[in-house]
Image (tube, rainbow, N blue to C red; front, side, top):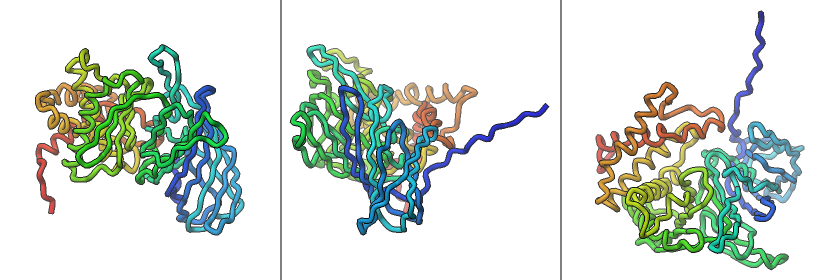
Length: 418
């Protein structure tokens, strides 16, 4: 008896012969039919001469792709989509020479209901009317569902986002808007252009169109901090605003590295896949993780709100400023943030005695999962993006935090390595 084995294609990461430098991205979401259209000009650096460019795309339709070199010469690309590996191949009749250029892509997609990529989030107005917002969840890795991109953490670039949206909606992204004008062809639309982001990974980009109230404060280092809440629930963001501003100041002082953006927004989203997501300058949360009723929220829920906000604020350094090269090192990203959240909350609310709860909140849950036969090391080689979601567990977060706490207790806060 003989058995034939079908060869399994090995997943290949993106080649590094073409590197993105700056995305100029324009998106127009339609909140009625749950679609969006987009176009982008990506300034790239060509490291090796090639006649093809490979990047990521998922659930997108690409209408055209062009390459323009610095002299203005334009090449039309032939597009092939690989839906299984979520890649797009753009092939040109001539080779692109070593140097720089711009890849221009027109595309469209859906505002899905899967809480991935660019998706729709349902909410109700104070009068009870059902409406939808457009929001994002790009980790991990789903920026490719919103626009064609090099959707791996090592491919850092800048992003200039422009959103065309209803003029009666709040429009947010990682940075401050630098231009906000009425659409020349539609009086019901506004065009909002945002300042360039720092150099960052694609999974940290975010943009939101919806209806929100907000509270704000200014930190001692002149960073504007806002809490965006559902309309009519502004008072439930007051506690979060206190924690968010104090956490930001704590980490700036602790790391002795200023927060590099002019603002840090925190926003409550009705539908979100994770408890929160650390998008640089625009952190998203489940409503229960950031809203606190001044009269009715329990002490334990206020404690969890403080821990969550401190965790996401820590990520502005661990993860955003310094990023893993590949998802294999996810535990460093999440383990450090899960450890640092305790340092921040202990400084802000020493009466919580938060370190006495580290064992029950972190170490013991990690040990329980680690006792199972299907446990895994804190560092797991990731060969395919489909494997990434399985790493967002207590081993990466809480076992990672426990290991880092042991190192911290042994080394201490004040160490001179010179």
